[in-house]
Length: 117
Image 1 (cartoon, rainbow, N blue to C red):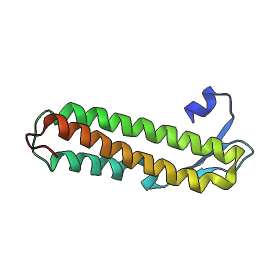
Image 2 (cartoon, one colour):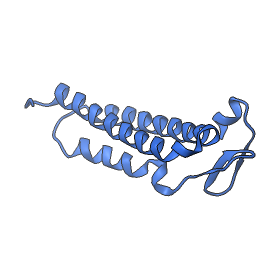
Image 3 (tube, rainbow, N blue to C red):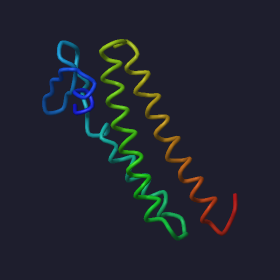
Image 4 (cartoon, one colour):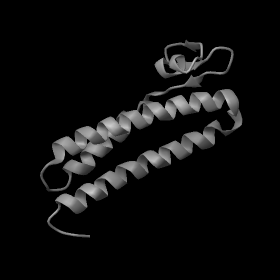
């Protein structure tokens, strides 16, 4: 909601819905918070041997969280302008989130693993 107010929108919210005043809101369920994807990210890194994981995992979690905030913000804006493509956008953002995680893991693995792909 903070980002929406910064760009000049009046917002409304309930316990689990956020939206722009006068438009349909976006329901934010538990999986939308990104907690499960963050746990998967941590598990992926700690399942493999190697050092220097702590900072990479911390910055990765911050990146995932920021990407998730941008995702929710964008879906709310799209719901205002083009409500018929919100489901497609949601799916695309999920795809890019998983792509980010796999890319971060690949970079870390190539840099810090003794064995090479």
